[in-house]
Length: 128
Image (cartoon, rainbow, N blue to C red; front, side, top):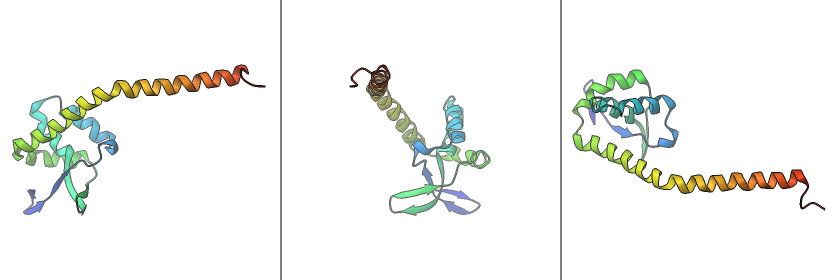
């Protein structure tokens, strides 16, 4: 919770990283480059909760001007909360690096199989 104009505002972490907007992604990527910008990074990843249903929630759409205004407030964020977000991305990156080779091999095999099937159909091999 962060107080904005005397009102407590609940913030939530970006719930769907696969649906993150291009602008939010690019800004987050830029802010990850320098530890001095962690408060800006947090203002991209954590946004006001606008709807909540049990454990599920929706956050406000990303807007660079809103993010810039909030960034100063995130300087007061607990180091443990910032660390949790950073560890999440570190863990995600590590897991992606481990699964990426097998995923790429699987995709390459599918493409190769499809190309071979197309070649067989085109050359007439196997047709009566």
